[in-house]
Amino acid sequence: MAADTAYFLLQTEIIQKWQYFTVILVSLFVAVVGEWQFLASGSHHSTRPGIESKSPHENVAYRPVILVHGVFAVNNSLAGLRQFITQAHPGTSVTSIPLFENLQSVEPLWKQVPKFAAAMRPIMQQAQDGVILICYSQGGIICRGILETMSDHNVHTFIALSSPQMGQYGDTSYIPFLPKLKADVYKFCYHALGQHVSICNYWNDPHHQSLYQKGNDYLPVLNNETLSTNSQEWKANFLRLKQMVMIGGPNDGVITPWQSSHFGFYDNNENIVEMRDQEIYKYDSFGLRTLDKRNALKTYNVSGVMHTNWHRNQTVFDSCIEPWLS
Image (cartoon, rainbow, N blue to C red):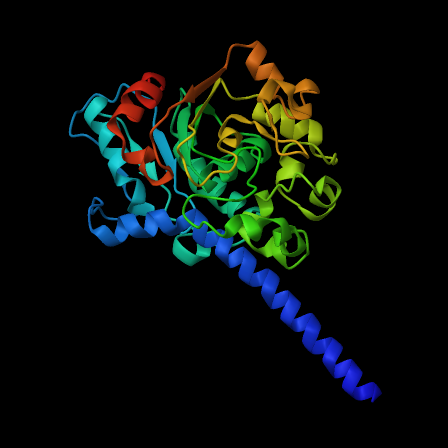
């Protein structure tokens, strides 16, 4: 009888773990389904991955631009954005980093950050006046990690394009039944196993903040919500930035809440707390308020743009990105 009971309990535990794993896979699917649909349509640009694009113009007058893709994307998924840049500013060097593509993009962010930083360093070393980072979706969270941990970066402008800077807490227009599941995702994400999945590194459950701070080893660390011996150094690194630009909007359909792209987020009643009312802003935990006081934060709220369209929308580029490439 005891053996049967133990076997039953073991089976139950295994089933529960797989249920939580299934939940997180659904969440990952939410974040990328639109991009899959786009790639399947055949309408994306075809370019060789991992190469630097340069205009034939001899005189390069603009800072180099580095692009970082989102979750489950491939290196050339931002080819449309690269084309916008080189058409608007001939002579601009644009490099899309060919790392952590497709399934590899769900590897833990603390594994991704140093490798992206190492790939960017040679570009930065050749850029006397600094570089511009344009980081899309999950890429924006990776770039935050780079900015804070890389003491010798020379990023002039960081453009976070529809990126969950305050984290993700789930429901989405792509999967109607996800609201029924999101309440349980923390059980997986804030477990050691969950922290091996990238989206769990920025899963921010407003109803379980204590577990978020204890069990999430990435976003609360970047935000200095959990102090470490690196806190002051990382804040100083972040403040090497000259300008941060945040772009998002209410029709995104994936980033939830969409205000996370502007450092807004839910309180425990799922009401939106805007950036300047966030604790990390009030206490200037990692330098956000300091940037704001320098007039170095710019926010764009753009309606009518779905998540998978930000990087190939000409109007978004013309009004929100191009002005910051000089």
